[in-house]
Image 1 (cartoon, one colour):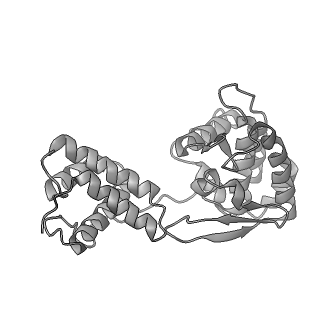
Image 2 (tube, one colour):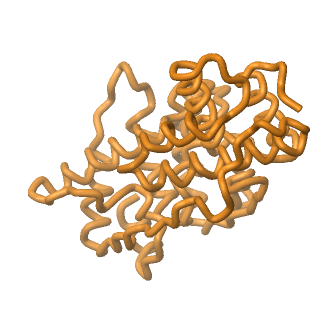
Image 3 (tube, rainbow, N blue to C red):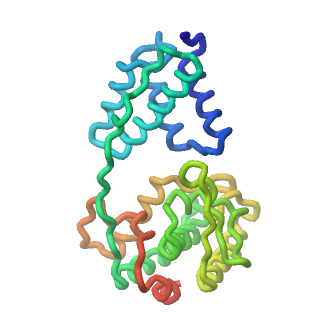
Amino acid sequence: MTSNKSLRTLAEKFINYKQSIGYIYETHGHYLFNYVKHAENHSPEISLPDKETITSYLDTFSNAPGSLHNATAVLREFGKYLSMRGCTGAYIIPAKSNPMLDPDPPYFFTAEEIKRFFEACDSIQLHKSFPGRELVFPALFRLLYCCGLRCKEARTLLYENVHLDDCFIDVVQSKGPKSRRIYVSAEVSLYLKNYNASICLLFPERKYFFPRRIDSCYSSSAIDANFKRFWMKAFPDFVLSSRPRAYDLRYPNLNKIQTFIKNA
Protein backbone atom coordinates (compact mmCIF):
# COMPACT_ATOMS: atom_id res chain seq x y z
CA MET A 1 0.00 0.00 0.00
CA THR A 2 1.23 3.48 -0.80
CA SER A 3 0.14 6.66 0.92
CA ASN A 4 -2.18 9.28 -0.50
CA LYS A 5 -1.18 11.71 2.26
CA SER A 6 1.71 14.15 2.07
CA LEU A 7 5.01 13.39 3.74
CA ARG A 8 4.45 16.30 6.12
CA THR A 9 1.00 15.00 7.12
CA LEU A 10 2.44 11.55 7.81
CA ALA A 11 5.20 13.09 9.94
CA GLU A 12 2.62 15.04 11.94
CA LYS A 13 0.57 11.88 12.51
CA PHE A 14 3.69 10.03 13.65
CA ILE A 15 4.58 12.77 16.16
CA ASN A 16 1.00 12.83 17.43
CA TYR A 17 1.13 9.06 17.88
CA LYS A 18 4.38 9.24 19.85
CA GLN A 19 3.02 11.99 22.08
CA SER A 20 -0.21 10.05 22.65
CA ILE A 21 1.77 7.19 24.21
CA GLY A 22 3.73 9.42 26.54
CA TYR A 23 6.70 10.76 24.58
CA ILE A 24 7.30 14.50 24.37
CA TYR A 25 9.28 13.96 21.16
CA GLU A 26 10.49 17.56 20.94
CA THR A 27 14.07 16.96 19.81
CA HIS A 28 13.26 14.02 17.56
CA GLY A 29 10.35 15.93 16.09
CA HIS A 30 12.75 18.72 15.19
CA TYR A 31 14.96 16.32 13.23
CA LEU A 32 11.99 14.67 11.53
CA PHE A 33 10.49 17.93 10.30
CA ASN A 34 13.90 19.10 9.11
CA TYR A 35 14.03 15.92 7.03
CA VAL A 36 10.55 16.71 5.65
CA LYS A 37 11.76 20.18 4.63
CA HIS A 38 14.84 18.62 3.03
CA ALA A 39 12.71 16.13 1.08
CA GLU A 40 10.25 18.82 -0.01
CA ASN A 41 13.13 20.90 -1.38
CA HIS A 42 14.94 18.05 -3.15
CA SER A 43 12.19 15.60 -4.12
CA PRO A 44 8.82 17.33 -3.77
CA GLU A 45 7.05 14.53 -5.60
CA ILE A 46 7.61 11.85 -2.93
CA SER A 47 4.94 11.04 -0.36
CA LEU A 48 6.95 8.46 1.60
CA PRO A 49 10.51 8.60 2.94
CA ASP A 50 12.93 7.06 0.45
CA LYS A 51 16.55 6.00 0.67
CA GLU A 52 17.86 8.82 -1.53
CA THR A 53 16.42 11.72 0.47
CA ILE A 54 17.20 10.07 3.81
CA THR A 55 20.81 9.46 2.80
CA SER A 56 21.31 12.98 1.50
CA TYR A 57 19.73 14.42 4.67
CA LEU A 58 21.90 12.33 6.99
CA ASP A 59 24.97 13.38 5.00
CA THR A 60 24.43 16.91 6.29
CA PHE A 61 25.44 15.67 9.76
CA SER A 62 28.78 14.16 8.73
CA ASN A 63 30.62 16.39 11.21
CA ALA A 64 28.01 16.20 13.98
CA PRO A 65 27.87 12.65 15.39
CA GLY A 66 25.30 13.48 18.06
CA SER A 67 22.91 15.02 15.55
CA LEU A 68 23.51 12.15 13.14
CA HIS A 69 22.62 9.66 15.87
CA ASN A 70 19.36 11.48 16.71
CA ALA A 71 18.33 11.98 13.08
CA THR A 72 19.00 8.34 12.20
CA ALA A 73 17.02 7.09 15.19
CA VAL A 74 13.88 9.11 14.45
CA LEU A 75 13.90 8.35 10.73
CA ARG A 76 14.20 4.63 11.39
CA GLU A 77 11.27 4.81 13.83
CA PHE A 78 9.28 6.82 11.28
CA GLY A 79 9.88 4.21 8.57
CA LYS A 80 8.87 1.36 10.89
CA TYR A 81 5.72 3.24 11.93
CA LEU A 82 4.68 3.73 8.30
CA SER A 83 5.43 0.12 7.40
CA MET A 84 3.28 -1.16 10.28
CA ARG A 85 0.42 0.92 8.89
CA GLY A 86 0.66 -0.60 5.45
CA CYS A 87 2.86 1.97 3.72
CA THR A 88 5.15 -0.66 2.23
CA GLY A 89 7.04 1.84 0.08
CA ALA A 90 8.53 3.63 3.08
CA TYR A 91 12.29 3.19 3.43
CA ILE A 92 13.40 1.75 6.77
CA ILE A 93 16.98 2.41 7.81
CA PRO A 94 18.54 -1.01 8.52
CA ALA A 95 18.96 -2.13 12.11
CA LYS A 96 22.31 -1.30 13.74
CA SER A 97 22.88 1.51 11.24
CA ASN A 98 22.65 4.14 13.94
CA PRO A 99 26.19 5.40 14.60
CA MET A 100 27.64 4.62 18.01
CA LEU A 101 28.32 7.67 20.11
CA ASP A 102 31.71 8.08 21.72
CA PRO A 103 31.17 11.01 24.08
CA ASP A 104 34.09 12.99 25.39
CA PRO A 105 34.79 12.55 29.10
CA PRO A 106 33.20 15.17 31.36
CA TYR A 107 35.11 18.09 32.78
CA PHE A 108 35.47 17.84 36.57
CA PHE A 109 35.55 21.23 38.24
CA THR A 110 37.78 22.11 41.15
CA ALA A 111 36.35 23.89 44.18
CA GLU A 112 38.21 27.06 43.18
CA GLU A 113 36.79 26.94 39.66
CA ILE A 114 33.26 26.57 40.98
CA LYS A 115 33.77 29.44 43.43
CA ARG A 116 34.98 31.80 40.71
CA PHE A 117 32.34 30.65 38.23
CA PHE A 118 29.47 31.42 40.59
CA GLU A 119 31.04 34.74 41.51
CA ALA A 120 30.88 35.58 37.81
CA CYS A 121 27.26 34.37 37.65
CA ASP A 122 26.29 36.53 40.60
CA SER A 123 27.85 39.63 39.04
CA ILE A 124 25.56 39.55 35.99
CA GLN A 125 23.95 42.93 35.31
CA LEU A 126 20.32 43.74 34.61
CA HIS A 127 19.38 43.95 30.93
CA LYS A 128 16.09 45.44 29.80
CA SER A 129 15.84 42.97 26.90
CA PHE A 130 16.22 39.99 29.25
CA PRO A 131 14.16 40.70 32.37
CA GLY A 132 15.08 38.43 35.25
CA ARG A 133 18.21 37.10 33.58
CA GLU A 134 20.31 38.17 36.57
CA LEU A 135 18.12 35.94 38.76
CA VAL A 136 17.55 32.98 36.46
CA PHE A 137 21.07 31.98 35.44
CA PRO A 138 22.74 31.94 38.88
CA ALA A 139 19.86 29.81 40.19
CA LEU A 140 19.64 27.53 37.16
CA PHE A 141 23.36 26.77 37.14
CA ARG A 142 23.35 26.10 40.89
CA LEU A 143 20.50 23.63 40.44
CA LEU A 144 22.49 21.82 37.75
CA TYR A 145 25.50 21.71 40.01
CA CYS A 146 23.80 20.57 43.20
CA CYS A 147 21.16 18.17 41.86
CA GLY A 148 22.66 16.60 38.75
CA LEU A 149 19.92 17.70 36.38
CA ARG A 150 20.49 17.80 32.64
CA CYS A 151 20.43 21.26 31.06
CA LYS A 152 17.14 20.57 29.30
CA GLU A 153 15.58 19.28 32.51
CA ALA A 154 16.45 22.50 34.30
CA ARG A 155 15.58 25.01 31.60
CA THR A 156 12.19 23.36 30.81
CA LEU A 157 11.31 22.70 34.45
CA LEU A 158 7.70 23.72 35.01
CA TYR A 159 6.84 25.93 37.96
CA GLU A 160 4.07 23.52 39.00
CA ASN A 161 6.60 20.68 39.36
CA VAL A 162 8.78 22.43 41.96
CA HIS A 163 7.76 21.68 45.55
CA LEU A 164 10.20 23.58 47.73
CA ASP A 165 8.26 23.25 51.01
CA ASP A 166 8.62 19.48 50.64
CA CYS A 167 12.14 19.70 49.19
CA PHE A 168 11.59 17.88 45.91
CA ILE A 169 11.34 18.52 42.17
CA ASP A 170 9.47 16.38 39.68
CA VAL A 171 11.30 15.92 36.38
CA VAL A 172 8.60 14.86 33.95
CA GLN A 173 9.30 12.88 30.76
CA SER A 174 12.98 13.69 30.55
CA LYS A 175 14.15 10.75 28.43
CA GLY A 176 11.26 9.15 26.62
CA PRO A 177 8.20 8.77 28.83
CA LYS A 178 10.27 8.33 32.00
CA SER A 179 9.91 10.73 34.93
CA ARG A 180 11.66 10.93 38.26
CA ARG A 181 11.55 12.82 41.55
CA ILE A 182 14.64 14.73 42.70
CA TYR A 183 14.98 15.50 46.39
CA VAL A 184 16.93 18.63 47.30
CA SER A 185 18.63 19.62 50.53
CA ALA A 186 17.18 22.19 52.89
CA GLU A 187 19.96 24.59 51.86
CA VAL A 188 19.12 24.25 48.16
CA SER A 189 15.40 24.56 48.89
CA LEU A 190 15.96 27.79 50.86
CA TYR A 191 18.09 29.26 48.10
CA LEU A 192 15.46 28.44 45.48
CA LYS A 193 12.71 29.88 47.68
CA ASN A 194 14.57 33.18 47.80
CA TYR A 195 15.07 33.05 44.03
CA ASN A 196 11.39 32.22 43.53
CA ALA A 197 10.26 35.15 45.65
CA SER A 198 12.31 37.52 43.50
CA ILE A 199 11.43 36.11 40.09
CA CYS A 200 7.72 36.03 41.02
CA LEU A 201 7.79 39.82 41.22
CA LEU A 202 8.68 39.91 37.51
CA PHE A 203 6.68 36.89 36.34
CA PRO A 204 3.87 36.28 38.85
CA GLU A 205 2.05 33.78 36.61
CA ARG A 206 4.96 32.18 34.81
CA LYS A 207 4.87 28.73 33.26
CA TYR A 208 8.51 27.78 33.75
CA PHE A 209 10.51 27.87 36.96
CA PHE A 210 13.39 29.52 35.06
CA PRO A 211 11.54 31.80 32.63
CA ARG A 212 12.68 33.70 29.56
CA ARG A 213 9.24 35.23 29.29
CA ILE A 214 6.01 34.51 31.15
CA ASP A 215 5.23 31.53 28.90
CA SER A 216 8.66 30.54 27.56
CA CYS A 217 12.03 29.29 28.76
CA TYR A 218 15.58 29.88 27.59
CA SER A 219 16.86 27.83 24.65
CA SER A 220 19.68 25.32 24.90
CA SER A 221 21.92 27.66 22.90
CA ALA A 222 21.24 30.45 25.41
CA ILE A 223 22.26 28.16 28.27
CA ASP A 224 25.50 27.26 26.49
CA ALA A 225 26.28 30.86 25.53
CA ASN A 226 25.74 32.20 29.03
CA PHE A 227 27.76 29.43 30.62
CA LYS A 228 30.67 30.29 28.33
CA ARG A 229 30.25 33.98 29.04
CA PHE A 230 30.44 33.49 32.82
CA TRP A 231 33.28 31.01 32.50
CA MET A 232 35.37 33.37 30.39
CA LYS A 233 34.64 36.21 32.79
CA ALA A 234 35.94 34.06 35.64
CA PHE A 235 38.87 32.70 33.61
CA PRO A 236 39.73 35.18 30.83
CA ASP A 237 42.92 33.35 29.90
CA PHE A 238 41.28 29.92 29.68
CA VAL A 239 41.52 28.27 26.25
CA LEU A 240 37.92 27.24 25.72
CA SER A 241 37.41 24.41 23.22
CA SER A 242 34.51 22.03 23.76
CA ARG A 243 35.05 21.81 27.51
CA PRO A 244 33.89 22.70 30.04
CA ARG A 245 30.18 22.89 29.27
CA ALA A 246 27.10 23.68 31.31
CA TYR A 247 26.25 19.97 31.08
CA ASP A 248 29.44 19.14 33.02
CA LEU A 249 28.03 20.84 36.12
CA ARG A 250 25.87 17.78 36.76
CA TYR A 251 28.79 15.45 37.47
CA PRO A 252 29.63 14.61 41.09
CA ASN A 253 31.87 16.67 43.32
CA LEU A 254 32.43 15.91 46.99
CA ASN A 255 32.35 19.59 47.95
CA LYS A 256 29.14 20.51 46.15
CA ILE A 257 26.88 21.52 49.01
CA GLN A 258 29.64 23.32 50.92
CA THR A 259 30.61 25.29 47.82
CA PHE A 260 26.98 26.02 47.03
CA ILE A 261 26.31 27.46 50.49
CA LYS A 262 29.51 29.48 50.48
CA ASN A 263 28.73 31.08 47.12
CA ALA A 264 24.97 31.48 47.38
